[in-house]
Length: 226
Image (cartoon, rainbow, N blue to C red):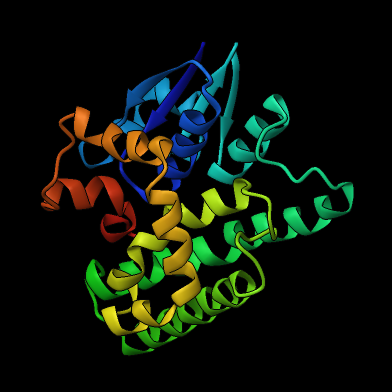
């Protein structure tokens, strides 16, 4: 059985959506990063990068949410375009989310809301890049129902994981302007699998407060001399 290490952050939620959509049997393993559980030797043996999500499938360990999505899609044959000519574009969009949308979105949130030193330059840069990347996603969705046209795919799941954070990383007005992203989110959120995925974190008592201990576990560079 698949063991799925997760919390309520955007990247684990992408994988939760795939698992629920696919019907794969899995065991959810909550990992509370605010308690430092990502730094235990046991978890580091699964993901040496100390991040969620991670997954163990029949003894095979995987990490990085988009790698997990691709692995599960290829394992099941689900949520991949049927047209072989679309494989290249799918990989391009999936890795665009992995290398651009996620990192810039995360940094925009961090420097605005959690950084110990508020740097106007960093805030401006990451807000600009987050907004630019999300505009590219919105423009792509203007061309069809889903990111890959008529095919609901792992790329849509990758977008779905991060899109709810747009108001927090940018603002409500900017988020409202992404009309095609909002259309996709409305459709996907209505799916029973998405509702089950969204309910998954509520079944576990994750720490909510961002106190000094949580900051030390999640942003150890603040306390580093390097």
